[in-house]
Each structure stands twice: as structure tokens, then as C-alpha cells.
Image (cartoon, rainbow, N blue to C red; front, side):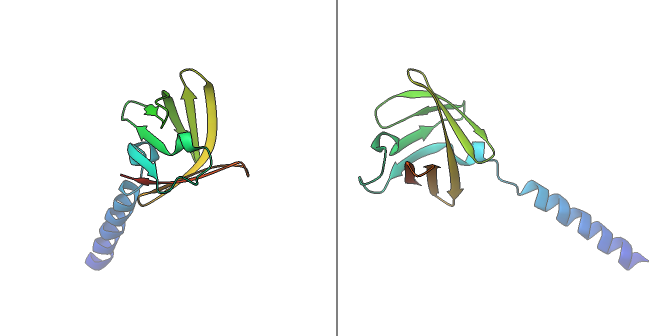
Length: 109
């Protein structure tokens, strides 16, 4: 009986640990990202800085608010309006895609 109780407690603690390991993309994206070469599409997105209050700045100095919803990154430029793109973060790599037109790979600096 003690053994079953102990195993149950360990299983509950393990489940709590796994739930706490979920990574919030809003936190992971914060920082400065740069393209590794100048052959990327849409070179103005080859330098992106995201801050912890929901703002971003691109390579041209344009800025605005950003919102993350699932795998969608919504960039609401102050002067140009909203652009929505798909994104993935793997380690220190950020990939931004939008159909066949946009495919940008950045590294966290």
C-alpha cells in the first residue's frame, strides 16, 4: 500500500513538473534576432528586436506592437498596419514564413 501511495505521489509530481516546462513563445521571442546572411527575402525583417512590453523594431527602424497567437506572429506596424506571419522557434533560431513569398531565418543574438 505504501508503495502504491509513493508511486502515485511521484506520478503527480512528475505531471506538475511537465506542466511547468511549457515554454511561453511570448517570453522566448523577446530579444534581438538577426539574419545570418543578406540573401534573405524581405531584408527589412532581417533584424528584429522584441521587448517584454509587446513592442518590436525592424531593420529599417519601423516599430509597432506584436501579438503571438499559437504559431502566428502578428506585427502591427505603427505606420503600415498589420502583417501576420507563421513562425517557429527552435533553440536560438527563429523562422518566419508566409506562403511561398516569405521565408526568413534569424538567430538570436
